[in-house]
Image (tube, rainbow, N blue to C red; front, side, top):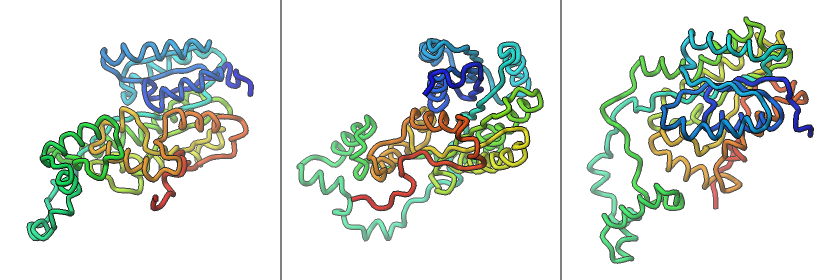
Length: 324
């Protein structure tokens, strides 16, 4: 494969400083694609991000970076104006929406199990109590040690780790839903329409968004983000149909559970990781590079007939049933 497959072409990546966005930037740069990365990071984070940007430049591609609000219309105009000047005769081959900014709150306070069920549950049903009894150690000390190890990545301790905790008072409201759906869902259309109206897309362009298993499975604290993912998928289908005459293909990537800053923000993320690793046929989590590799493949000429799909990139995690 020619290492300069995309020489002279550009990718616009929204959320390009970490996770899927940064991994995709590295992958596309390896194959000669110039990059426009939009991100929003604090100064302390920027110090960690800058070396990654230099690695991208090391592939001999042009790189524009904008640390600004990708959701603001005036900032979008400024970015696309700058991109026009930098591209010259080039055009945008890839638009990747990887914005992870949403509200992770419950929709109702958690309600404990009934006192009757708690009274009738035998003490031995608590695996920590049973294990503490065997080890002749206090349950509290064992629980503390287990939780520390679990938080450090010992996911096999999932069955006896403390359950995740959630904020009980600050619940999702209509404004939270609206902001999250726009940020992580419908804002893809804003960027796609502006690039189209400015005639900045290549004749064979690819638009990508990122969804998750939360589009069909209810995770506590994920209601607003789940709604945004479903909205994103709907917008993606509309782009695929209505913009096909302009040479634009749109596909949504459903990644498996992946170690990213966005995942770490989800309440109970360690439990999600443990469950995903346990049922994945390959016994590991999805990586940002796994997803970047598929975005690269779908950006090739040979993938031009893939359009309007939700494509799972999870090693079979989604379809795996009971594990031994």
